[in-house]
Length: 424
Image (tube, rainbow, N blue to C red):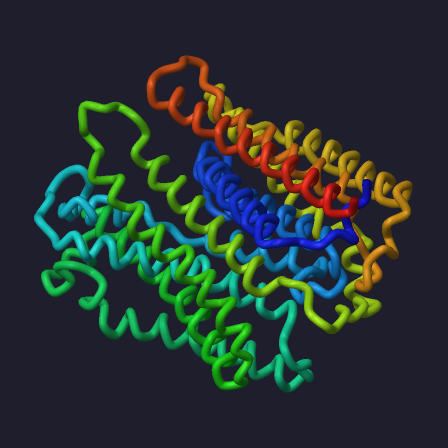
């Protein structure tokens, strides 16, 4: 039964938020696993959330009037999360335990734990904040002209440059013991990592603040609310979840690092769920159709091609890492061929379903295609997780993954049945 015309109640919104939360725990646990470090892992997590957001946006009464329901949201979420993956934060983990090492694990001194929690908060703030900015761009309350876009981008660039200059002018505000000159000693590799990390994170934070400042100046308060929801929705679990790291070295030998990352994913997923509930309800106005260039971009398949290739790349490299072999050029050729076949199959499935014009946007990704991409992410996640030898830590992770996926599937089925029942 087609559920597109059935009304969403608070129950459906709550279930959608729960699915985004639980799946976030899975996505972020995979992000950082072998093959999925940096922006590759960020793209996997972002693509997963993007598919859920867009799929939920396509269902329910007034789907065409959901302000953040168009295909640009898939790009915003996917690339927004991937952008955050360009920064690193592992160097701050020892700080939350009150220890600062010049060359880990040697030459350690006490440091305030709040230094570590504060830096983790900034990491989450820019990660969620920038994706929130990109999401907000998809449905401005007032249309933007070319000069408005120039000013918006200019504010972001100015913020990024300003933040980069600020941390270089006042490094002592962020880096413990900076006045002792330890960051200029090449042998103190952990200090050098911390300095590089600050220099990388600062522009991302400044970019977020610049974009946020523009929306405040423009008076687009829905955009401001969206951005702050996502920013704090990632910053809080990033920081609070760091407490799991204090259990490292305990007699219970499980992956405390993964507990922290799953906390980030659960918190970030909840932020997505709340943002969908609060800001993506059906309004009065029908979304405008995509422009010719935008429609051409989506019809080219690039928004599906790019993340699909990255997911497969991470899968291949992760399996090579598990097998302790180097990736071969032929392997990359094979994955590109598979990605091409996969995306072409999605395009044919979409054309066969006749759904290309089923949306006011003039372009729609079929639910079958969304499901296929989601299944690919899940398979890739399991493939880089299943170990050669089972022990307590990876057994606990596997059980949690089953819970996340199983409960999410049950909720999705319950949502489907609920919407079907409402149609009578």
